[in-house]
Length: 342
Ligand SMILES: NC(=O)c1ccc[n+]([C@@H]2O[C@H](COP(=O)([O-])OP(=O)(O)OC[C@H]3O[C@@H](n4cnc5c(N)ncnc54)[C@H](OP(=O)(O)O)[C@@H]3O)[C@@H](O)[C@H]2O)c1
Image 1 (cartoon, rainbow, N blue to C red):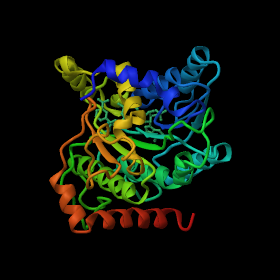
Image 2 (spheres, rainbow, N blue to C red):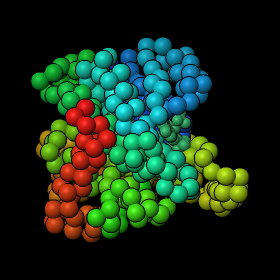
Image 3 (tube, rainbow, N blue to C red):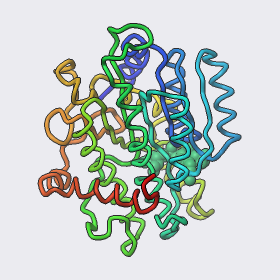
Image 4 (tube, protein in one colour):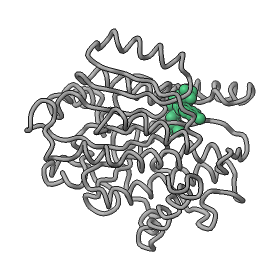
């Protein structure tokens, strides 16, 4: 667990630890947890660059305007993209790659609270499962060269060669909720239900990120459960469902994580040495938290209070039985089917 004071102390020390000029990409940065974390990132860093990816241009402009006043040395750019489509993910990544050699933080929180049934895009994937899993992994896959560059210890940081190097992927969904999957129908062509969609997105995020951490030791991969945060997540719901959620939010008030605190806590996950990559584990021995995927794997499942979850039985089983690699191969096959060789 991390107290809010410890979180704030960490965040205030980011420039001291990693230097200035950090680059962060917030997919879903126009609202909710992504927006709150982008705000915390700009507040706590110097001369940094952030990319907000989403569809709501007016909202993005408002956030950018506020952040420009708060930190005139920062640079925040909006990329308008419908990331329920892999081709739009590719376009957004190209726009970033044209400007940036390195990406220090890839923050993934695009989502929808929609309770409608399977909603297939013209790429043949379910919109919700795509937002919560496939398009997130497409961002990771596309931006791995920039994340690797950020981790490259032979490259000096902006301020000094003594600073640490920061390279992290954070996916915000529901770490801790992993469950068994329909292994013969991972994209839920025939087994779609709201429950299965949730289970598949959550478990595939954890399993795929654990796999990626095993082959990219310089980068940390972190799946978080944010707790209950009042955001725009119910915007796609009908009136009745919206009323029901509002009533539930009143009952859940004692457990609610304030909007700003959620951003501070996610920035902590994105920067604390507790969640260092596998390659840095020796350096932070005794500081780093227990990670999944074997000791020091560089993959972490982080709860809303900053603690890590106990190892998941189903993930251990999937690792031992080779299902972990199978899920990543399936993900690459989906990319190839939808995008060909691109
Ligand atoms: N809030 C909670 O209590 C809570 C609890 C558990 C898990 N979560 C998970 O946390 C994640 C973030 O949720 P949140 O509460 O921050 O929700 P939010 O306020 O609704 O933010 C979602 C973000 O996703 C973007 N987005 C949605 N559809 C998109 C699309 N097709 N293309 C591009 N961007 C899109 C939205 O941007 P535009 O509107 O600009 O497109 C927005 O920036 C979700 O996956 C959610 O399931 C949230």
